[in-house]
Length: 298
Image (tube, rainbow, N blue to C red; front, side):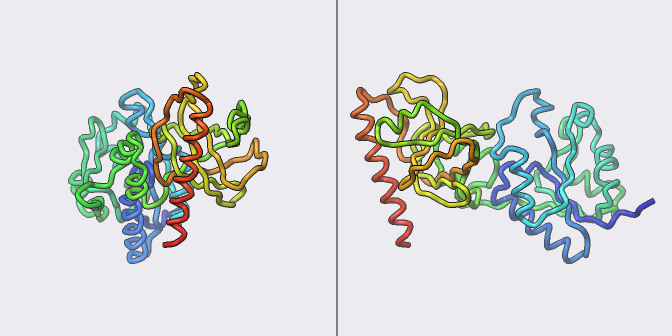
């Protein structure tokens, strides 16, 4: 039987891979180096709450993007538990035996509030007391910014309020979405502001409105503005994500683009005329260009 290399196992959902998660990853890398063990992340798909609550959970990052981001922190060993009803009903000790002890872990790293097992009845103390010294448990306090604990739920709350500056601060990077450029009604082009329309697998979007954004096309960054909303001036009902790229006039249908959100300009409004809409878009563009100019002068 092939003997597993001793592991340092970091456990969690890592929704958003925010600053708190990043601090856990850096700590885990340090422990792995010092103990000469292989660092591995243990995560869950789908999110356990989807199974336990039997409802869809909107995630900051789609699962595939989360895995990609975790790997960007030089974590190449990622184990996935296909979470289901059977696992949700496991006792904490059965969970440890099946997924932790069997993994060859000698170090376990979790957040201090980590819960597992049926009815979330297992915690850090359960891990510590399991067969006593089988592995060393490191329970880490998630970092705070000012007086707020960094958490996915807080970031989601900021997103729902359109507080992008706070979102970016807690993520440690600009919030972004990716998707395919699809053909729209070309309304923007007709009124002098051509836009890209995004089809995306991101379920969690910032509050409707107009934002200062970076748009990445073929790896090149463009300044722009992005509107998330329903275009009430034109009586539309489907949610659209439309970006106007400055100094750009190419057809890019079918390409994947990335949109990074920097600042919210205003809420979406229904204007009395197309002319009034155009005047407001001009103001949005000026606002964004001023923001980019200030940034380049820092």
